[in-house]
Amino acid sequence: MKIEPVWASDFEEWWHAYPNKGHRDWARSSWDESGPPIEDCMRTLQWQCRSDFWVRDLGKNVPWGNIWIEQAQWLLENPEPQLLDPCKSEGDWARLVDTKRKR
Image (cartoon, rainbow, N blue to C red; front, side, top):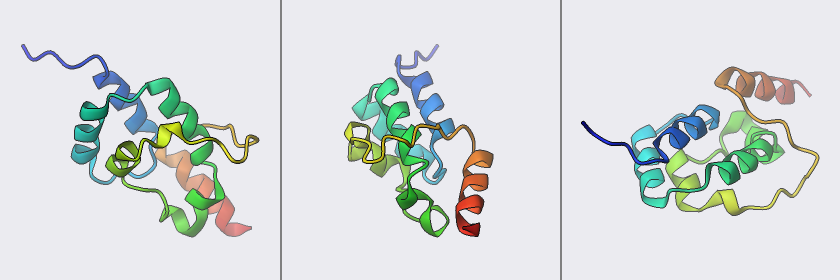
């Protein structure tokens, strides 16, 4: 029986919330090497997913998950504290991008 690291389910929670679904295996490998704290990751994603930089140009500025992890982006500070709503699913992300595009 293979025993998953404690943070394996944390990766799944983060991956579900992360809007750029490319290169899952690379992201998983980076996650396993880094073991970032899930609370910090989710808190950072809450504001990053709503930031103009990430939403601009249909999300082309959202890095691949492995890059996000390797750059330890969970340590970044929110430059716009009013952005607190979390990205809950790809559907939420698509609706947000569509809403911002119509402005």
